[in-house]
Image 1: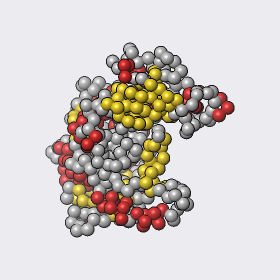
Image 2 (image 1 turned 180 degrees about the vertical axis):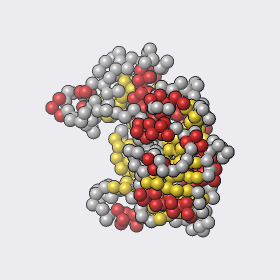
Image 3 (image 1 turned 60 degrees about the vertical axis):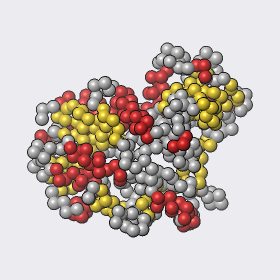
Image 4 (image 1 turned 45 degrees about the vertical axis):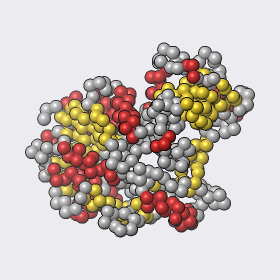
Length: 490
């Protein structure tokens, strides 16, 4: 039930509401929204909240949306109760509508928690919700502990959302995010084996890569991240990041002029790379800003080399446990072949190669394929072969191999947008014994698994044995997810 007694005690407008038909935005309001995106998952969450009997939520009119798209327009609302922490990491408030005294609108408020009573500025409006900016916490939630906040940029920087929440509660939030994602795509979460989210060994100073933004104004040059000020987003100077490794923080301060000189080589806005290159054996920490520099990363006794600008997990501290967990599902007496699809520079496949007789890596990028082969040689992996595949027919390269699908484990670790129906159909036709799906977006993972299980040729022959969140990015809303699917006939 919503607590209406704490909502909208006082409202102040920046100016009178006017109709702006002549200045209406040409941007389409009814654009298609990916349900696996941050906005898509938020809209699904708000739809569920609006179905509660005392919500009485009404859509925001086009006139009001147009009005608040002008940067100078906002309204102030006092003593608003935060009713939920959404999957976006923002609190959700229910505020009386300006257009209908009997109706309410949702407001998404960064840096707030359920139970907080806050004063807000409300700016940009969308059809289903408005964007709020926290002015002050009037009465804190029992969940809030501001003594935990170590970063001076928190409450403005958009990088972290949860520093005021205990780490135990952060992990609970991420487990619930996994549950919400699978529920959104039709799974019965009471019957699904969703485990507690795995904690990161490091909660701060874990991130080995930063990409600070810079603006195009060389007279007032800024190097940092996007922040939220007075309800509007803009770039601000950043001199430290509590979740980045110490050497990257040192670079932001001591080498700032070097970084700014590099930025001045470009006429437009963009990003600059900061990649930690320190190895455990190094006496002096180091970093690079060169995308093409080949760096080394040691994980679980293996060494990996790749260009600094290419993808590699940014929290190495959690990777050994991830590999160990996946390894525990591979049975050497049964599983003879490991197929690592979209294998990148070979991290997962090479780390697990000792559990099987043969490793087959498939990659659609020639550059990544070269480094995967190189990394196998660096680690003296003799049972690995790597093949160039295509996104249209990624399993085609397996046709010439003599492998038994019933003795095969397939790994997929796609980008945030998830896999494709074509890939999932091919995977179903191949019919391996075990499927390991690691995802950086649990919502696209849930969508893909719904499609695989219910809409592909052999999907009904599989069952999900494990779904588990992994906290690769403490202090943020983000959660990785590992799903294990087993063939019922094995």
